[in-house]
Length: 248
Image (tube, one colour):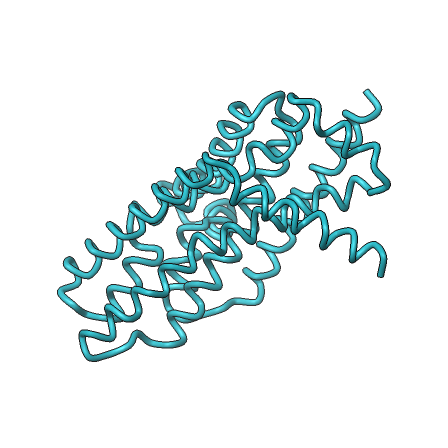
């Protein structure tokens, strides 16, 4: 019980730090602009077709993927790397908290802010309602579930990148490289003949997951497990990286 209370306190401080960081407001502004443009282009391109607009806006737009791939590393880059550089991490490490609690609290703080970034997009439902219809509830629910799961994974990767990087710039670049590899490497399967390697690459393709599952109203429990396990492994590696630096 005491451990949970400590975790909640640390998480609250992390969330608060996001709303007091000027850079995060810049990230928020760029994110909202790109999201607004993505929605506008989708609505125009789909000529008011509600379900098609949702599928395009949530997974079918290049602006969507720019936000998905590049925003999480910007949210996590300072979490450990910058605290280590500035010397504030050492003070936190001497407090009566575990490395696991520190990493998980920073991760939950980033995840909370990530959810806050996406929350305003729900307003777009009001715009769609003005066309006389709301999008399919199943498609909408699974699309947002996919956004949350993908964010959970990429933020965890970003925390790991921050844990192994000497400063926040390197952490951001490393996180973006990881995300781009996760996005583009499976696309190589399109050039391969049918076989086990192509099937394996398709299974780890975050683009294919949106096109063939989330955007179609399908919530595959296998995909949910993959995203959660991937996030857990990334956070575990971040904890180990933090431990190794503590004793180095």
